[in-house]
Image 1 (cartoon, helix red, strand yellow):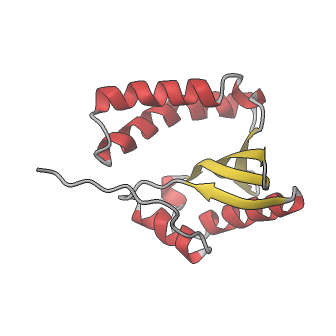
Image 2: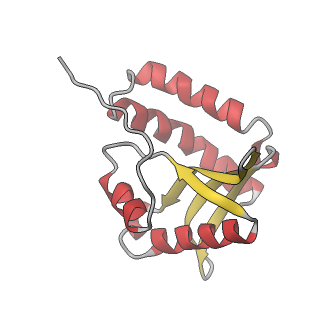
Length: 148
């Protein structure tokens, strides 16, 4: 990802994240916006140069088709990765790009000795959940709520 691509990403990513938090019912939109700003500030304090964080743009020839944000970290039981964001342009979804991007991420992680890849997905994102399950990701935690 270039500096220019990163700036474009950050302009929309915080807003999208806040919208997803609110749509999932985690908190109201004003609080979700503040949470999104703070999460991005903490996780990417130095933008693209933030330690352990890798942001890539995915291409099909010269066309940008998506992006991925991966954090790779050493823990007491080995090297692990966490996918903070993964996106395919809306008009290109359901065409195999998501699967190809995830396969590329898995290959990159294998080459770096990563033992596992984690990620979070909002419960209402059924397309992403289906893709991750098809690719072998397992549920490790579920958070639920009931509206009264």
